[in-house]
Length: 181
Image (tube, rainbow, N blue to C red; front, side, top):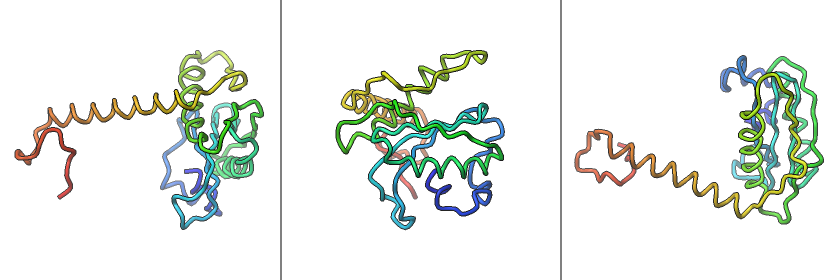
C-alpha cells in the first residue's frame, strides 16, 4: 500500500482499491525504499510506519535511521490526503538499530508484533500509549525463529482444514496442497 501511495500523484484515485478506513484506529505500513515501479522486487531496506488515525500521528520506526525517512514522510503525506485528516509525522530516533544489512525485514515484523500486542491491544481506551521503542532490544535470530513458528502453525492449520473438507477430487492426497484446475 505504501508503494502505491508513493507512486500515485493523487492518492484519492486509490480509494476504490484500498480498504475503507472510516472505522480504522491504526494502520501498520511497511515502507520499502524501492523507487522503480516496474521492479516489484526492488528496494533494499524496510522500515515501519504506524499511523494512529484517532490521534492523527504517523510514527516511523527505522532500524537504519534515517534511511527511509523521506519515503515515510511522503507516505504519511499521501495517507493524510486519503484519510482527509492531517497527520503529524514523528520519526522515532530511539528505534532499535540493526547491526547488519539484512535484518530490516525481521525488525519490521518484530516491531509490528510488539507495538500491536504489547502496546495497542494491552491498553484500555482511556489511557495514552507511549509508542516509543526506546530500550527495546530486538534479537533478529529469535525473531526469525518466531516467524518460522507462525508459518509452521499456518501450514499445520491448512493441513487440518484440508483433511476435514470434502474435496471434489477424492483421489487427491489429503496432505497435498489444493490444486488449480
